[in-house]
Length: 219
Image (cartoon, rainbow, N blue to C red; front, side, top):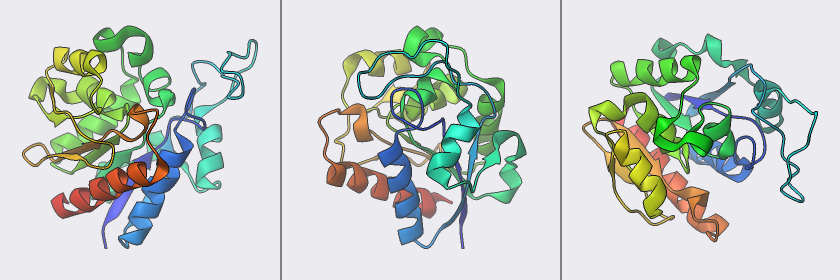
């Protein structure tokens, strides 16, 4: 039975992990009979957003690991304990937490910094030739980490975001929400999910399910 590491970036699409993408990822893994373990960085979020009105909440801090534990129902570990040797593959759901808490892509595009612990784990999986799945905006994190190896990725069809990925060396391929892009040479699978804000849940689940199926085949 395959064993997959899942990295979350908080809880809530505007300042953490996209909840629907995260849950659908776990559902797709479970449907395929794949074991998984959830991790998150033990650090403060970049900021906190009121998801009702979209405004920043001043003077409030939240911890990425503690917030991610909401989605994981408490079954989660500090990312520092993720050992690539224990797993067959890595998956990262999206949400702005990826682009705010684990890197600064939301603010700096291709000039973004990446959290050293996060980039280290991604590079560990890549160096071990173990598949990496990235959902929604998470392919930007992959591009920031290993873009110099010229992987083929997708974030859907947004030209501006795609252009920033290509500045990092990645090759962008347009993709429908219900599908995924498989780079067999680099063992990287990506799907747009809610990069299309108008996508419906069934389309998002279709894309994530295909990503999981292909990831397992590569493992």
